[in-house]
Amino acid sequence: MSSDFQKLRLVDVHLFSSLYDALHRGEPVEFRPRIRQGIGIIYELFGIEVPEERARAYYERGLLEVAGEISFPLCTVCRTVCLHVVLKCPECNSRNIEKRELMIHYDCGYTGRFEEFQTNSLGVYRCPKCGKEMKRVGIDYGRPGFGFTCIDCKAVFQVPLVEIECEKGHVNRIQQLELRKCPVYRLSEEARRISEVFSIVETMARRLEALGLDVATFTRITGSSGVIYTVPIYVRGDPSLVIEIAPERITDETYPILMTLKAADIPNSTMVIVLPASFRPELEKIFNPEKIRIIKVDDISSSVDRIIGEIARIIGVVSHERH
Ligand SMILES: [Zn+2]
Ligand SMILES: [Zn+2]
Ligand SMILES: [Zn+2]
Image (cartoon, rainbow, N blue to C red; front, side, top):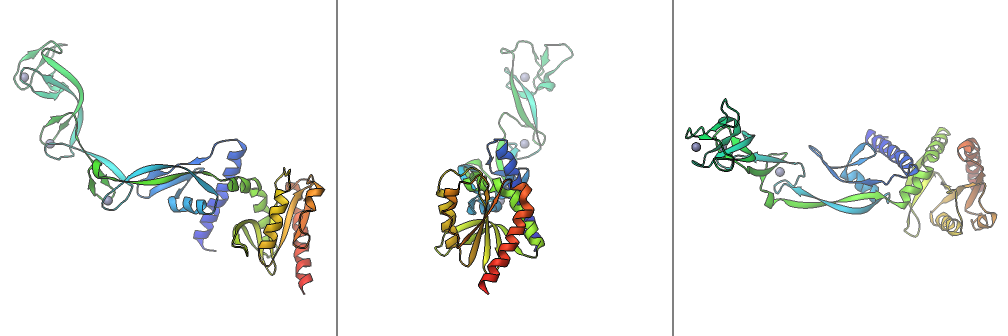
């Protein structure tokens, strides 16, 4: 197993276990794209940042759905989203500027930093350009608030030149920037379903691996019909074993019918379904006994030993029947 694969696997484990917790707490789960400088678009999945390709892979696996879109500006040269704002002096293009409170002397029109006009007496100011005393606000002088001064050319201005620079140093005017839309994701129904059985599936998979079996969890298998199924536990072999955990509350025949179709469609496989003891016998009859083995348990978490034992026995029986 490559370390990349192991890392992805850890993100999967983290995602599904966090998902399970979040859904139990009834929290709305939405993943919004963000910019991480130096990387690009990232999504935060319960405290772990993943690149957008990873989030898209979850979307393609059917675990996320698109809930909306957000636009991000792009550098017109290299198309990165990692941009920052640059403020410059509009006179000399210097970036050596300061934000200051400004004052203006109406008589001579001089505008400068407030401190330049201060005298020793409170409320009395003196224009540093013409030397006149100024006392009355709105008549002698104005205080237009904050503005900028250029350290290099001494220009005073209220609105600096605004440019957008990318991480590679390409300079863009705001009006020239292009936009790229990125999806906002939310959990799919499938992800909700998977999260319900996630921890028990992980436990069972580790136990089966300890028996020397080749096990994959939540893997995608293409049926003979071309339909792609997510299989909670898949034990590779001849035949392979498709292990399903039934949800707690099943009220109609949809689940047994779907499972019967799935069992028939996945080539060279036998299906094992772990059912809650409360499962209604009349619905149980729908499962095709030639393709589906049933393990019924009162409480799944405390029945792992028994389930693993039965699966081991089924694998023995299945391979025995074929020889
Ligand atoms: Zn660029
Ligand atoms: Zn003056
Ligand atoms: Zn300047």
